[in-house]
Length: 424
RNA sequence: GGAGAGAUGGCCGAGUCGGCUGAAGGCGCUCGCCUGCUAAGCGAGUGUGUGGUGAAAGCUGCACCGAGGGUUCGAAUCCCUCUCUCUCCGCCA
Figure 1 (cartoon, rainbow, N blue to C red):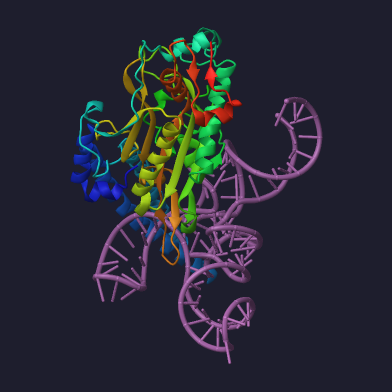
Figure 2 (figure 1 turned 180 degrees about the vertical axis):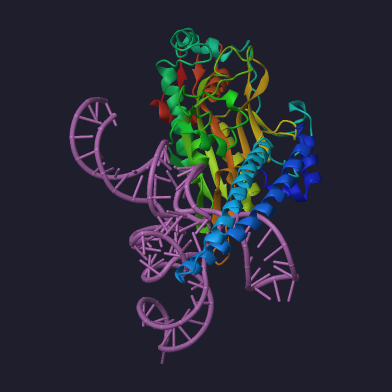
């Protein structure tokens, strides 16, 4: 959520930002409601002031044993008017709120202007795609040949876009999770948290998934609960409506959670394999920082996520999302894309974003500076560190051998009892 | 699921028969004094949001005592609904 002051005082700036994003907003409706609100409020506050002073007067008179009936009768009318105006104001503010909640964040000045994903500049490329002397197989074929993935049975149990890992596959997924968590907690200074996987509406609204993107979520029928689409949601909301002490900042959290996404509107895309699932595992990185340091923290966060791929010797690149491709709540986002040999393309495996104060304002996350009056909003950041299913897919594909076996990267072997190779 | 108790400022905790309580008192914190260090002591200050005014310090309006409604000239205080927390019983991984 943007600060309403910014919309009032610097509308042109916001309009340019929205244009760059390719977002259209009904500004006339906004300014109309906003000025209506202002006039109602002025009238209302004048009347409330009158009511307050007269009520004091009544109290005074009663204490003196005087009769206040005349004033009381007169004030009845004022009270009725106040009630009417309050209702009107409430409706007006609700309308404004609805509009503001639907306005995305302002892209940071360093974000390249562009229309869509084709305009995302590459920032760097790390590692070389393996040079196979044979046609590399897709991970789902490798997984099924190895007996570690079973999409047919997963479909029987749940439906399309659900994974079933078996034996060494289940263990490999778990090894990746543990490897990532150990890396981030042990070397990058994050505190591990294990949050609820189901959250309420306020929490979903705090990070920006609601009200605009309800169709992407799984909702529990008959209850106002939602399955989390990412750990970002419960973890960022840990400090919802709290005032942190500045000495606490920055806070680094990492969390493993399953993620649930309806994937509405992605019919026909990535129908095979682990790339696009209704349920997948992810290790997430979340930061709460002072505004002054959030962009330095974003660079560090990105590097923390990249480290996972470097340790696993998986080739990847980093792109900067342009204004037209950036997410709703984000001010700046880097995507890390891992090389997928069977498709011959880089695929997103992590998305690292600085939300600045956009989520903090919605969720009410502030900090207090010693010796200074008032509170300030923190900046929130997060990034995948990494999407586990996609990591496993990339690992199978990049480390496959001509005989159908898969060589386990060194960094992962301790988590698999020293296993060096998956053999069919 | 049944029966009770509670939700007040950064924290703890008062709020009597509704009015002078934005909220006593304590802790914490800030500034000053004092003490040759530390501790203790003394004095003053110390909620949030939003608007007006001012160069600023400040002054000032309105709102906020879990949330939402209601009663009333007036509600932290009375009534209703909801949420959450706690205790006991039952059930259960």
